[in-house]
Length: 171
Image (tube, rainbow, N blue to C red; front, top):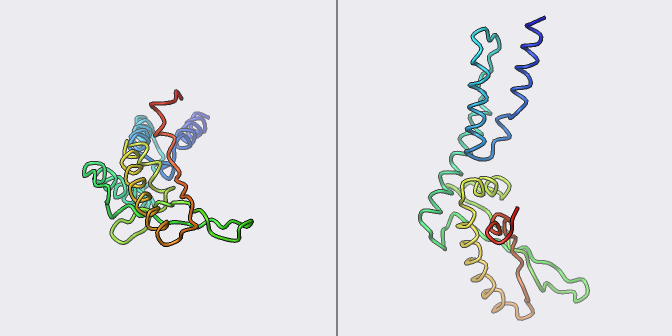
């Protein structure tokens, strides 16, 4: 009977946080601590092996995190790793493209990363402000370029992380 209870307890520990849910360094530390708790019991009979997929995810997050920290350290508003694309928004009433939405991507060694893979990490390691500054700088340049090329162009929208509002708003 004890083995079944231990097994259930073990299963609940693994269900607390799974490797694929790790988005920042703090969660990674929590995951490691969770693994250490799992193996504190000397009678532990269950072993979880790290898979190739686990390693790939760890390497990807490490690569992105390293680049985010480097971007923050360099403070280069024209950093080539941060790309801005404009998605035009069509006005049905006017039958023209009058506005657009600025979209951010991250390019690391030729590999394109979408915001869902780097924004939460940037928020967690306090690099989001650097990305916001780069984005706004590039959007300002793109807005001038679009206004000069398309006189009917009116505006570009930009999404900003709520973490940028922390000083202004209590959570």
